[in-house]
Length: 129
Image 1 (spheres, helix red, strand yellow):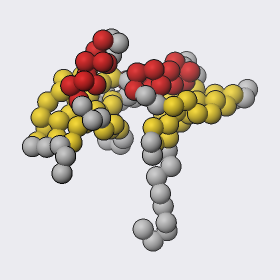
Image 2 (tube, rainbow, N blue to C red):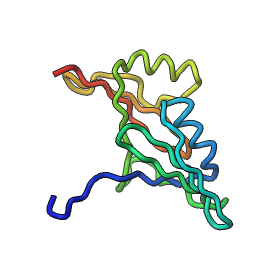
Image 3 (cartoon, rainbow, N blue to C red):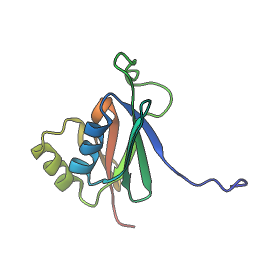
């Protein structure tokens, strides 16, 4: 890259950033980072290795995300070592799957879950090599 860009974060909006943050930490293994609250802002940060997610509060009545398919950011993906084990664990916790585990192509299995605020989260398992 000519200008030296590196990935920094994904930014989400939520009516309840604390609850959204708990979803990522309790169910997906993220680590809770900063929580910043002022009279105009509530931001909860959660982190995965190499991925920061900022979750900002929006006021009641804020328009929900467009239904899929739509343009723009469609989902983010989390690589897991064993998709079947991850799916079983998440189902036991009551997490909704919008796509059950499936072989997408040789060497790649995927599933999708619904996160807080209708965020689409892909879980993927890549075959070694």
